[in-house]
Length: 416
Image 1 (cartoon, rainbow, N blue to C red):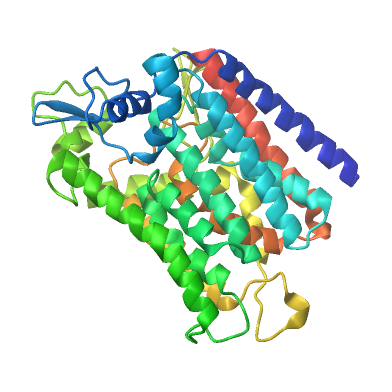
Image 2: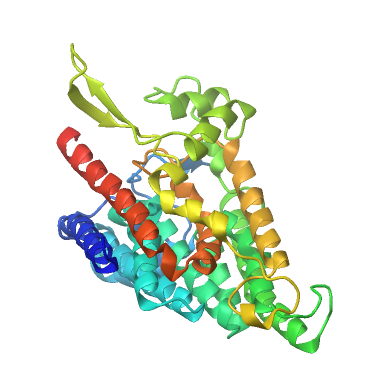
């Protein structure tokens, strides 16, 4: 089969998925995203909402109701809430714009790394339609997913600027935006800084240029940390209290699912969650429950999701990631060993706490959405691994991922 066939197949499958996204976009209704309530609260000069929350992750503290999530997404939509009120209903539209812009950024990233247009096009499709960012986009009307879309776009743009070694202050600002949307992404800072100073000099060598870049990245990141700590203090009287501990329901709370039991009996972090999270992150395959006397009727998709490599098998090509050794001038678009090691360590540091967290992203279908916090590192390594000779294999693996997403959409539609 020719390259054109595979590119056409991937394009058709991506368009089918985008059609489903578009149908969700035009059918979105308001009062589903609690960031509307938080934005309204900010407009009133307060940090709590006086209305019932639109989701289960609001907490009661000192008789007031708080949306506990990081504040930046609410700040960004304040003008829209000021105009349309909490009935505002274009979150999926905004998420879709961010989704498409993220795809464009990854196209530009891989082109900057010297790959041809065909590989770049396939890579942009893979990074968006065949990863959890598609799922968070199609469900962008809910608070958790909207925040992840903002974070993913901000980090994608930060990485694009970092590999071009441009505008360190804007890079730091984008990290700050991501942190104030998804807290754990603050751990990406050392990796992105390392990209900014990637050269043939020893990593520990101090130069004026490196100091300037460090300061420019550090200032907005430090400001964002101060903002978040102050925000916590103003809400809960403690800079390090995020509000998540108040998610734990009281003993008489009517538990509706295993998460309620977990929070009440085991807490937010516990070693009991390790095996569940480990299997779902690395091993669990695409899974549909069949029901009925003969187990022949579609029941539902597994709400715990699908392991990353099972849903996005093109990531196995990460095994081909090259390493630049020494001052190899013929490998300008290959990362040094130190960059790869920093990236791997960053990924491990972000995965470890998630293995002990009470939720792996529940509910989610055919994805593990928490991987979006560190997936950009894997994607930028993958961008260096791909060659023109990999096109057909890469396209075949992407096609499989897209078919899984189509099967997921059909199954959820038929069983909802």
